[in-house]
Length: 121
Image (tube, rainbow, N blue to C red; front, side, top):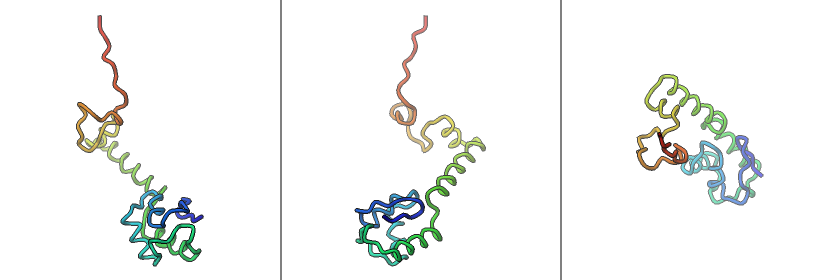
């Protein structure tokens, strides 16, 4: 089983698909990594040689920010927005959509279940 950037890749998938299991690597960047590492896209993860795995590790370590470092960077960016009290930061603080979506209807995933209006006497 190939382990790259602290993630065990799925062994029965093609390597270009399996690389997307790493946080920060999508389909297009996976293909670019494979071209740089000189690995065939159709190769299954279980069929990789140790030389291929080390070449992939080298390319990812030098050129890409992935997994823990990327998660920390994203968290710090959101925290910076919240500290500056920007509009986007306020939306993150209030747990509302931050990218301009409507909230009168929809946005239930972000807002949570409906709250019943309490009856006043």
